[in-house]
Amino acid sequence: MTWEIKSQIMGRPAPSAAQVLIDLTGVPLTVEEVLSQSSKGLENAFTKVQPLPGVLKLVKHLEKHNVPMAIATGSMKKNFLIKSAHLSHLFDPFNGKVLCGDDPRLEGKGKPDPTIFIEGGKMLGIT
Image (tube, rainbow, N blue to C red; front, top):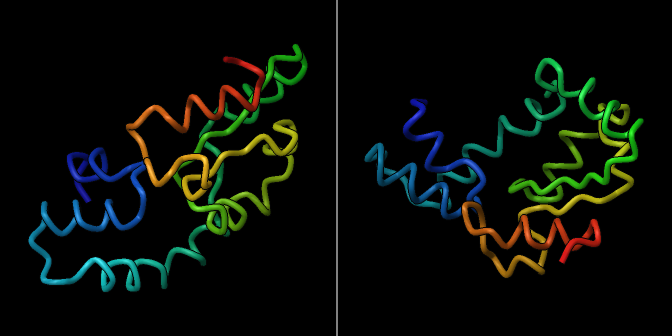
């Protein structure tokens, strides 16, 4: 997948991302077919996700210095839980302050809409 496509689908709600993928590639599938086919391999891949170099060091540094942290992810909660289950050492410092893309507070608005970041800030007491 090219960067052009990735940059246009990252963080979007799954149906919106699937439609963009269809529009950009011309793949002869419906949104439902794209979502069904992509979900088959994703769950297995999610269990193997690893943090990028330096991420754990950064999180531990912020935790040590009591910097408030939250996660604002476009992932659906089900997928986030699969991705993070084997990485408790990375996610525990967030103390459950995680806002996923399917949270009702977002009203279906995905990135780049700022709602997820505004709601994430509220989790930290930022108005």
